[in-house]
Length: 98
Image 1 (cartoon, helix red, strand yellow):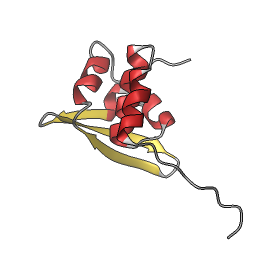
Image 2: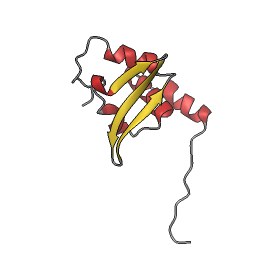
Image 3: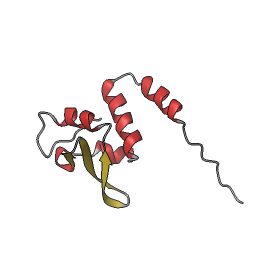
């Protein structure tokens, strides 16, 4: 079989516990978006306002990653995305990171 490592997937409870231990609101919000979308961290951190569209209470994020550009719908975290977009210009990043 070779050197294949076993991949362990976190349970919903473990993810909730991890999110609950986040010290800052923006970290907690980012984790929620990552959980719902399945996106890579870099894909979400590089989102700009113009990359998010809203319809029917949900949002569609256009993300760019290793495999190209794709549309990712999210509903539960759409209000979070709206909060980050408020007051920003189209070319501004949603999340501030260092």
